[in-house]
Amino acid sequence: MSDNPIKIKAIEVGYEKFEDFEPSPAKLEDLVDLKVVETTTHAGTYGMGGPGFIGLKLDNEKIFIISLWGATGWVKIDGKILDDGNWEGQDELNEMSDNADNKLNALIGKKIVSYECFEKSMKMEFDNGTKMTIDESPEERPRWKGTGELKIIDSDLREGCFLSDVYQVII
Image (cartoon, helix red, strand yellow):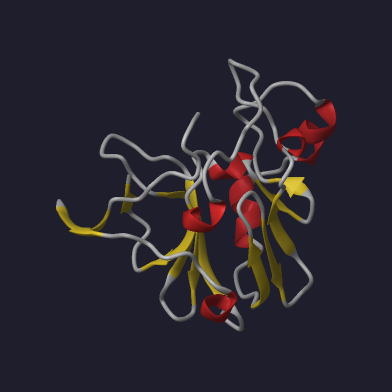
């Protein structure tokens, strides 16, 4: 899969109503001291389905989006990959995987205390000590099922972690 994170073109603002949308990278000051009130592993759409972006709705009504295709296969909570369902092999990573929705839902009610995003990695920490991360090294991620290739971030991850008013960002 190339061009990860995915470039966003628009947001859905009503039934079949869209607005152009060019997201700005999220910054610490946009997120610190905000509580997670809702989560999803199904943010984003391309018209015929979803790319599986992660969305964290915050108590200011904004949604923090991670726009990696099948984001649960990239993101870890406390060192455990959210979902390795698109990957076969490396049993030690398979054993770490639990239900992605349950892991994300455990963030509900937690306050963001720190956030750093770099070109190839991301780290968010919550008031209970929980850490949500994307590792810089592709060797630390599950491989793509079928090809067995490493999951490479081949554009700037900072552009793929942003705030939106809605879950349905259009790619």
